[in-house]
Image 1 (cartoon, rainbow, N blue to C red):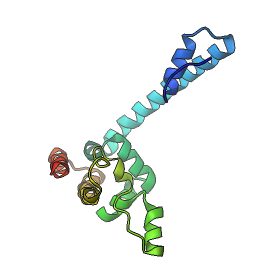
Image 2: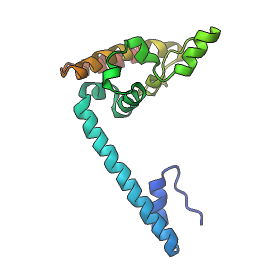
Image 3: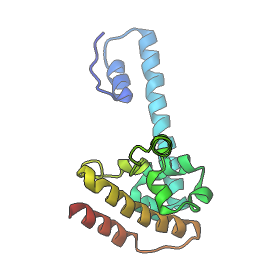
Image 4: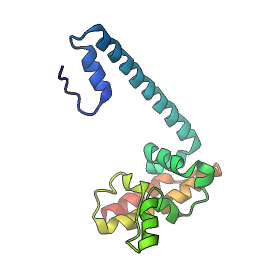
Length: 165
């Protein structure tokens, strides 16, 4: 059976369920659809908790990047201790230690490379923009940790302006 579904397993299970298949394949398709629905519920739950936990940082860098930073750092308590330079290269530890060991060029960004629009910038500009994002992120992380709110939209606008220039 050849079902074209791209890279989306949920679409595969839906197409499998709607095609002429035997009982075992139908059972597997139903389980797959239930797992997809479960994954969606977990994602919604995490998103709502993260919005309550780190609202400023989520507004600045987005839900996915915020989760990745939390996971990589071990929590907000650890993340708040990091300076902007550490936030900038968090996720590029292997490259950083290679730089320290062999003198190869230092990494300019780690997880931040996934910030929307950063990867499409010219290579020479990416490091500067990553530094700007890390600086703003250090501020929003501290705002979240101490329960303050601030003008995150102006920070986002500043980043977007620098990315355009």
